[in-house]
Amino acid sequence: MIQIQLILLILSENKGVIKMSTTVDARGLSCPQPVLMTMDEIKKAKQGEIVVLVDTDTSKENVSRAASSKGWQVKNVQGKDEGYKITISKD
Image 1: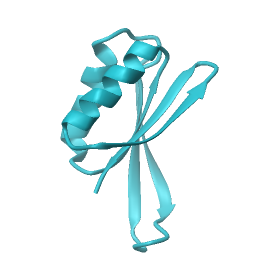
Image 2 (image 1 turned 135 degrees about the vertical axis):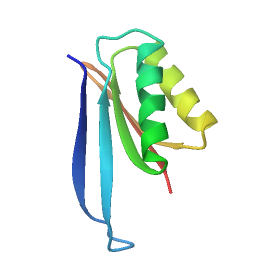
Image 3 (image 1 turned 45 degrees about the horizontal axis):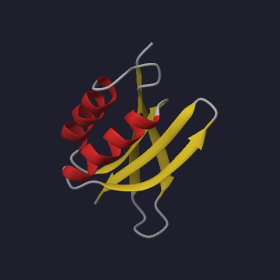
Image 4 (image 1 turned 90 degrees about the vertical axis):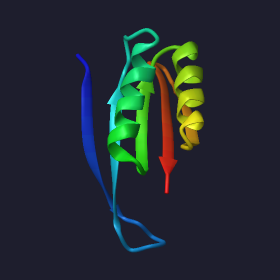
């Protein structure tokens, strides 16, 4: 099941504002689906933080490359048993 969740984060330590984080769950999907889902969220969000869940090395690399090409920074990539958690952001 494709699931996109909005998660409200606690107050930012630096700016005292509420930040929103969007999670794109693209596990079980092959490219280009994870990239397309991420790009859709990038267009909607314009800035902030997006967490992308994927389960292949190829999807991890393609999502990271696509986000960078749109001016987003790859803040963190965590390997998990079920795949990867990619955190991208843009201020």
